[in-house]
Length: 338
Ligand code: AMP
Ligand code: AMP
Image 1 (cartoon, rainbow, N blue to C red):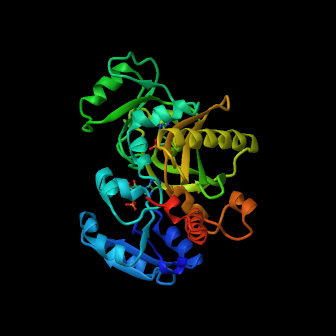
Image 2: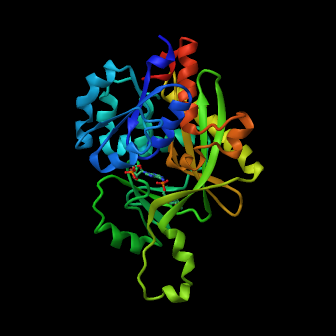
Image 3: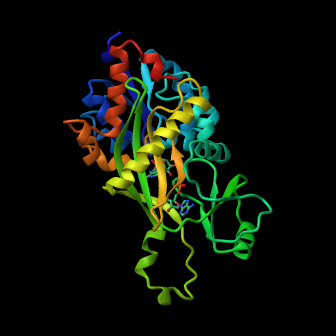
């Protein structure tokens, strides 16, 4: 079956515009599933969104399965899949899915994610276990892809104990707060070419932590401001080339180890190493995102890095569609779907 018989489908949120624009540029039919509050936005882009299926709530999504199968849909997961659908729903979905679902557990469970990173010899911030003495500033994070929502920081043991009293999340980790700058590296690993490509780099614009510096410390005194890390937008970056070399070799190890831990396919497609770079130029991975991240939305028309590899605008969304197209042409579609 030719690739034009497939429909690329996703949920209306996160990076849906990029994914469907990329799919259309590669010649696929496109379909979007969304809730009523988003329909006005997405209808505006009928140039590349062929069809919109509206559902009242995300929980209705599994009910669409038959329809999507009939249309030869391939689902492209993004940040909202785990956030809105949950891990189990995600795994149970029978519609072909771009990616390896075995990766979901390793990503969602922060302890497993840590094992994966350690095995890949990637630096990760120190993690404090229950009962450990807290001897430095820490950040407390709940599980799941939540865009920094609900995180908090504590300077010491006393402050941590105090704040945990009112913290409602059941599953969370306590991690060393690394002082440095955040840098998010976006990669794509192609199982067809067995190569890793640097797609782009961004940093996040987080409220309110990114604007605390606008108020001098002396004016903050008495205001009782707590830093929060909720992402509002993303900002493109070009990094020092030496950092790029380090990030690339980290990505390489992360992929290699994933093939052992989540055999045989391991992690493939888009992924992001979310890092903090310190003043000693150490790169700490604070999280890995095993799918397209919203920071790639800065580069719908390509990035300086994708331009090095492609003489045409190549977003991460388009790169995904290109991979599916190449897989169809080489009769290897099964290799990129789950
Ligand atoms: P939304 O489309 O804004 O409802 O976002 C869907 C999910 O993706 C939520 O869990 C968000 O927290 C997450 N998300 C949305 N935009 C971003 C972003 N720019 N960076 C990181 N996560 C995001
Ligand atoms: P994450 O959800 O892990 O991507 O983290 C969201 C944001 O929290 C990051 O962009 C950072 O600003 C901040 N953050 C997370 N972990 C750490 C850490 N260990 N040290 C410093 N800042 C962090």
